Length: 487
Image: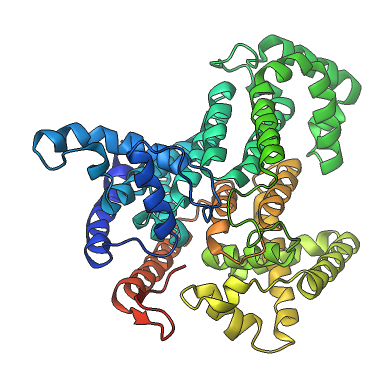
């Protein structure tokens, strides 16, 4: 019932808003001017054609071909289209993301129930609906961008891994990389999550798996029992980070063949990706000069603050500040060292590794353009004054994650997020979507009021952004055409 409710509610806003967007903005806009014609070339069967300005693989276009093929026979019968290529209009291609957004909301619901089986159906449904409203995901549901398809493929991969269907998970990971190549990081993260789950929770691995390799059944239990005789204190107390790493290596050695068989598909995806990068000479396909890998450590700082603001009811509260102060007070010496190191790293990041990409400085259609000019670059000291906010955001995130996740998982998540964001020279809030979803899905916060407040916050932001996009167009003196505000 929960899945159906989520699908119906999400569809109830996707359908009318999609109609409104396509009526007011019928032609391709921004990056759509590259994606739509490229997809239409594929609809014509011209698979050898490629726009050199497109940076991502053609996964979205093949998904659109499958989507369009579903309703082409009906349109052909009613003579609405005489050929397959006629069906590949901008409206039809945008509807790919509308369908994927509904599927994505169902995947979110399934992941929530997998991670938190004790959570009642009403709360799981509410959480899934609120996350479907997440502004960066919600806005691009109505345009032909790769973001929705990328998130959907990554979450489908993760759900399959949670269900211990590792072969299918790796295949979905290959699809995710075929949609956006940076998703290789999330393929590795999901594989690491599988290793963590299998080695640190052996008592739960006696569950039937669709794969023969990693049921881990009695063999893992025997290995676990041997581990108890050598270090039972690790089982009795809450593990520290180094204890968890030690136990992972110990259990991985005992389960080496099961892990090798079950997780080898992920390794094959990695090998295929490395071969592609070697052949292509770069991670991106086109516009290589504008998207060259650059150490942009300030990006991880921006992500922490943006994520904290999008989860304001969780982070900006007296209760959370008190919880952070209490955790600091428990181990004052270590906390002082961690805080000092974080502040130093933050100041060094914004001073030496803060990049103003030419696209950011020149394109006033994007909201980061105004945030950069009016906030970050408003005064030379402003980027340094924001560092304590970045640090607070990360400490708050770590504090909340530590209440529900193992320390090694939190570290893996941070490293994966950094690996995705730091090489990106351009400040694009769209890049934060996948790490944000992994973050919020693993917080395990049950506060009904906070989730409602967050949903209201998202609705307000979405109303503002779609209003600005549809009803506040403007023109450039140096270029013809209508311009619109966009994330």
